[in-house]
Image (cartoon, rainbow, N blue to C red; front, top):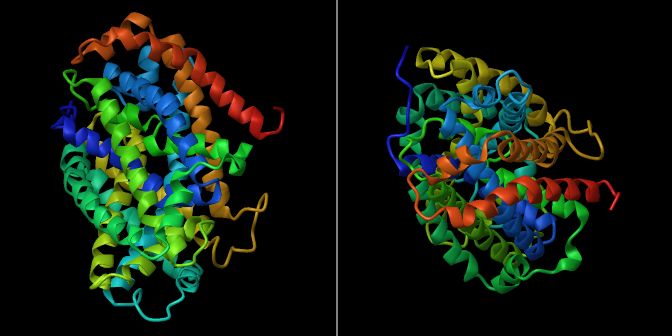
Length: 446
């Protein structure tokens, strides 16, 4: 049998794990969710959910994967043989399959904008960036073609494997993205009228919160950490036994929260300074970024660099989504990786075509007042992910033995017993209750 792959370093694992959500979940989705769901109040609730619910769940998923050394479906089966618990892994595969099908559409948008930036089509006087974005996403042939290109790029990297593909790519992508993000923030917060945007983002106004905002904040916290879909189970199955899972968890959560803060500071000061609306929705980033870079000397050049790095970050998200399905098929046999990557990737592309066309020839098709794209996003982020998270919290805290959990948490760590009980109680009682309360509140029972 072929030798099982492992991450070559702790840094490689952390960058890949954090990158799995930072690209789309944080840089693209987080700002528009904040803009449409309550501003600073949403951000505060998101932080609370991330720390008290997302973080314990993340550690739970890492334990499952590292303990078994198996991909998502096989990991649950190994811990609870002869039961139906492995369906948690299958639910994760279904969820990420749908997820990448429509997020590859966003990846295609980024590719289009990158090529437009190279030809100088994004920077110019008196440009209407709302109209530009609308015209771009309504061009059906264009968005489908670039959606396919994005999927092919994802397949090529995942087909190369964990250490040769995913890990190496992230070691260069993430640091470079941080550097240019800082430059973007400096310009954004120094624009005239930027303070209003900072207040909107950082000052909570709880009158803006609704039951839907709570559900969206919960879903965003899961998406920002890639929990609830067993992606981290698969990722941690490649992790060495000598690594500290608590330290890895803290590093991933810290990176995610820092980039969320950076994303908000880069976007909202510019939104208010330039007289735009924070409620733009999925197109917020594509409308704001060109406008900000147009205010910077050599803005076209720096916009191209940012879009390239943003593309890299988005690809890291796609890598993790494709990897969970590929891992389930190959089960550690790297000889099957290339074929599995192409088969699953093309399937995801085909499923995502209606989402790509939902802003063009299929724009008249709506359900519950939402487009095909928005319905797919709502299904994944606000229904399937919370359900997966609920099941994982129950599985780890009720099905796995407490001494095994303590052993895994203690491996490579010191003085963990003091907070182990708190983590265990959160996972066993608080998290399932919180998820169910948010769901019940959203449907109007509470």
